[in-house]
Amino acid sequence: MPLTLHNISKTIDNRPILRDVSFTAEAGEVFGIFGPSSAGKSMLVSLIAGKIRHDGGTISYNGGDVTAGNCEDRGFHLPALTNESVWRSLFRTEKASELADGEGQAIAFRTALEKASGVLLLDNSFCDMDRLMREASLNELRRSASERDLAVVFATNDFEDVMLA
Image (tube, rainbow, N blue to C red; front, top):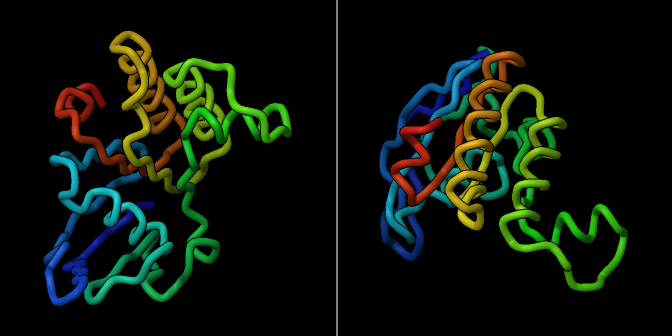
């Protein structure tokens, strides 16, 4: 069940943000997107999810064209992995989180990984974790992707994260 992007492009205010992006993320594989801040990584992940529209190219999954579908139609998982989102979902409260940012992010990551099927999209999902927690999470991501045939695409500005995954 591969996820394939072919010539994806996005322009904002006549400025190309993404130009002819193509790749395939196979089931059981973790595919990392690396680049500096404001390079378009988050936009690409949102485009894959169907949260925003692109200007050209196709997105296919499991042999079918999902380009025209919205986020819900595609069935891809793009979780909000912030400390506050975890706190609110765990305790059903609007009160501020009492978790450290990295701890909350790790809990959110594990929860998202448990719920995911098919395609899991992650956007800077490890940035608040310390190195040990990050390495453990990336190892778990790689193991789960392989065992559960998940096609995982994650965006990061940390090259080591890509190498560890």
